[in-house]
Length: 65
Image 1 (tube, rainbow, N blue to C red):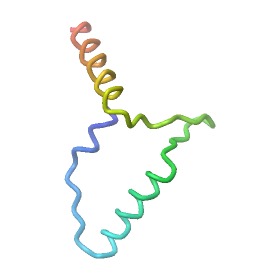
Image 2 (cartoon, one colour):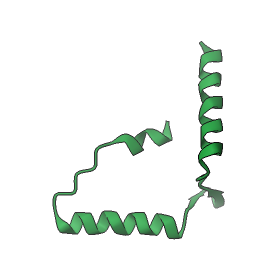
Image 3 (tube, rainbow, N blue to C red):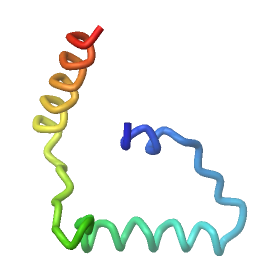
């Protein structure tokens, strides 16, 4: 699942790594688009919509078993 990467431990051992991490976060806030196959996709940020998507995914996985 693509969202599993958000649960990884982030280690920022140097000030340079911390600055790069903050810059990446700021860049993602300023331009929350993902480009794949020359199409634009939005990043969902509404917690209610995300919850519904996750519940649907869970139901679909349960139906496959």
